[in-house]
Image (cartoon, rainbow, N blue to C red; front, top):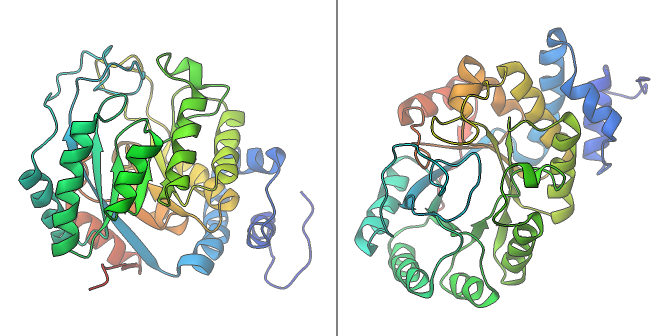
Length: 335
């Protein structure tokens, strides 16, 4: 790659950062250069990535907390998921948590300094009764706490999306997970277009779309580039970047963990392609990034605190210390 001689541009990665800040889309060739870059250039790559991250988010880190509001009992066959009908993983299975438990979860999110509380339920999509339960809990949470609420309740209809928006749900998550080409290798019980349609309905209802990817499911570098670009085209405001935690009992059991250095390159790519968006290091960061987790903050401006759906996360205090030690600052809820 030729180096453009401009002020502040001293490497090929600085040139890509400049392109990202100008709103230009990286080419597939440039994306492959990032993903295939030598490890001895990793710090230079992260330094350039940080310029983009800092431009939009300074040194702030957004914290999010998940509550597994309904576990297991899912008729879908997603290969990565311990809650799917094809999984034999020994997980807890229960119907939707009651209102008081959901509200208690919101208080715990405040305790963990999370600005966004994510109510996640397994299944293809929420029933009318489940929407009623979630709505009632959200009404009380909104009266008591300054949290932003994100719901992840599967495929959703226009009227259900509207109901959530009307009670103040700011965000709805529905991940694309992988590229359109690779999607059928991961699940057969719904289509890639089903997922895109849900995100579009969320946007139409006035909620902020949250949609991301899972890396490490046997996809190619081309798939990684494609999903990053597809999320850019979808204009997702928040992009969770998950790294597969291959849970025993799931169809993807046995896939090797990713190299931490490669995970950092993936995060850099997502930042360059979606420069102004919230990039969140999500599920699997502890087992894939391992001791290099702190470096991920040079690309990402958001993480989950606490446990995930059926797997344990890092201790809350360790997350807080990691952010402080790196010279970053937790973005607190507005009181």
